[in-house]
Image 1 (cartoon, helix red, strand yellow):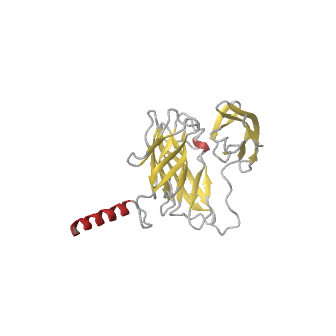
Image 2 (cartoon, one colour):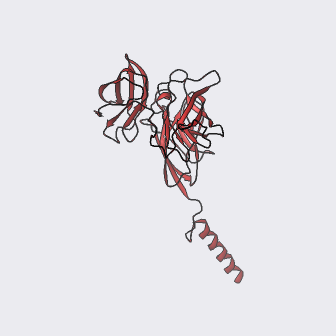
Image 3 (cartoon, helix red, strand yellow):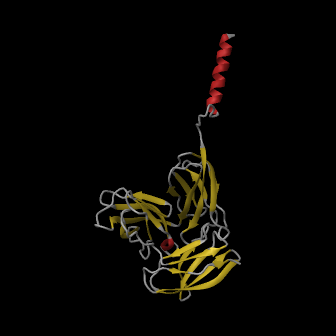
Length: 294
């Protein structure tokens, strides 16, 4: 009889532990939210892309309208996921800060090719290398070495068109410095599949001259929220030179050489009036009036 009681007590204890009882918490799960976008079109992938945790489970598929996804049941602390396009494109692996609760992983870019984005991080004050800077671009990331150099491998690319690739904004974070942003425009991949962005400057956080932004045309598509997934196309003489896929904040950005441009807006059957933008100086920002989808 005592033996039976002991067995029952042990079974009850194991059940309590397995359910996270007593304020414990093994097996906590979180969810990932984001968008998977095509480096060729700047739009959602079609067919849909499978997004999964490393190892294949759990998994979900992207929305064909705007590329959005929600991946639930992901272990807390997860720092990577994979995207498997529904065509012949390669598998992509993406990194992000440790997941906790509902984690927004941002825009994850996929395409027919993969390249390495190479560059060097220097201080804008004394031109010295900045080590241990985290550099993020297109859902991939790397850390600068003691010489300030970084290589972000496995970045989505298309040799046929760079209009979406050049529209992606990369970020640089280093202790003691302002966050900096950068664009790869107008660099293309070399014969070794390397996109060399050269030297990127970061400004010490104690400086009175924070860094400028890496775009010179910006605007908003309304209504904010429902304009997510709108494709904004920047054209010169009728030809597309940049595309941007609007997120939940309704904003879009372009970095472009001085010139006269038109901007088109399209989301499914909705559109907004074409706008004009003239950039006279590379470092001056043109703010385009808000447009509304109809």
